[in-house]
Amino acid sequence: MIRIDKPEKAPDVLTKKGKTKRRGLCAAYSRYADAYKSGAKEFKFDPKIYAHASVKSALISAQNGKCCFCESKIIHIAYGDVEHFRPKAGYRQKASDDLGRPGYYWLAYEWKNLFFSCQLCNQRFKRNLFPIADSDLRARSHKGDLDREEPLFIDPAADDPEEFISFREEIPYSINDNPKGKATIEMLGLDRNELNEIRRDSYEMLKALYRVAHISPPLPGISDDAKALLDKAIQASSQFASMARAAVRKQFSPL
Image (cartoon, rainbow, N blue to C red; front, side, top):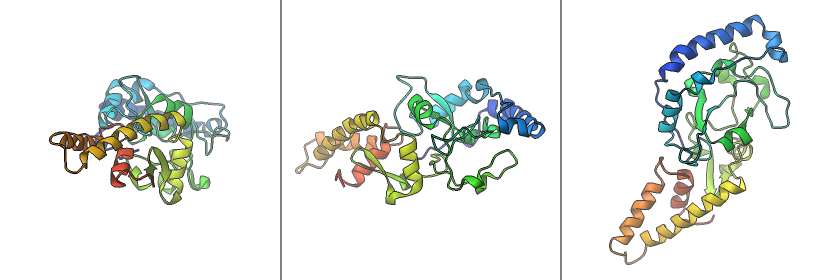
């Protein structure tokens, strides 16, 4: 994961239609709170608003076409999902828990709560998961205080993921075993075998480039080209930039 710089201004569809929908959801909860808590009533959300083409396009641009979690390039092979960081319909502290209701319904159309994600990270791993350090402090309605929560998932638009997660070669690990990095890696499947395999291919290529870039004496033209490719690999627009940055900082040491 790397830091995502989203535009401060939300797409118009969120500030206009989304704002109206939010008021309706909050009013409905205030009127039928017990029914929404029990699941007797369920909120209906409009993907034509939160996943509107303008929203998705803005997220793809801000994220350089990469998944907000695993940093895989998506758009050349899949449509990708508009992901709610705090789940809108219900939540789970851990995967084995029953679904807690209601979810963060009042954030369904909030720009800060939306990211672009690959289907595997979103649908296979994250789903309704949203662990926090103290579940008693969870905001359970629009009247709750989100500032009291301490999410255990890294928010790539609010946190710097590279302060919590680094890499040993292609394998991610939690820096100093911090709980935020640990939960993000384990619960979002950032160390899944398929992902490690494709990162391994990238790591080996970058390692070879590093050797060429720093060979002594330099190879005319070739060493400079290798350095340019390494510089590109650590840019935010590149796939697996966080792994590449860690590798370059460690000079490709396996430790």
